[in-house]
Image (cartoon, rainbow, N blue to C red; front, top):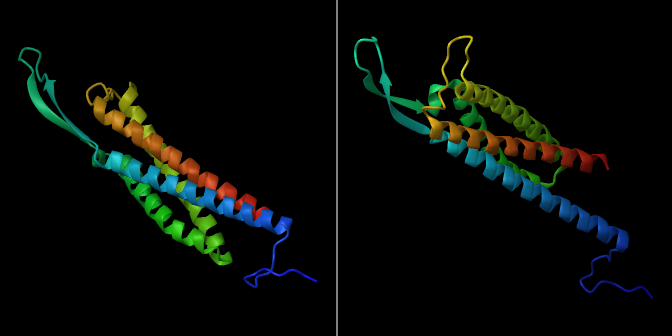
Length: 189
């Protein structure tokens, strides 16, 4: 005589239970990484998006006259690389919120689209991180070949916020890359 489940559902053997628990664990890990990517890219966009600093800088026009104090501002939207970084992090965080819903559906066509969109987020974030890092290093070190002075000696807080934003965005892009690797590994099984 065969035993039946009280709810009328077919019973699972050990292998099916392990597969179901691994699938549940993989889905939970995927959702956790997506939430972390959302938080990191949103934080990167906010940190850089509110970044501005104004300093009064003495400017000497002629050696015989005293220096004139002029207020000078550094804002994130003055440089196109920082604008690109804010926009790409905002897009990535919006996509991460949308992908949370899409990833939970588990449909075959949706999973393939999510992998492709995850790859696009990786490419976009890495390119914006490279652009922002290049400009950030230019502000930190200057460029003696074109006579550009170091800016971070004057706008230290501004440069520190840029560095934090780039670090957060880089961590977010690595998490999106991890999502792609996890999905491809799961798909290859």
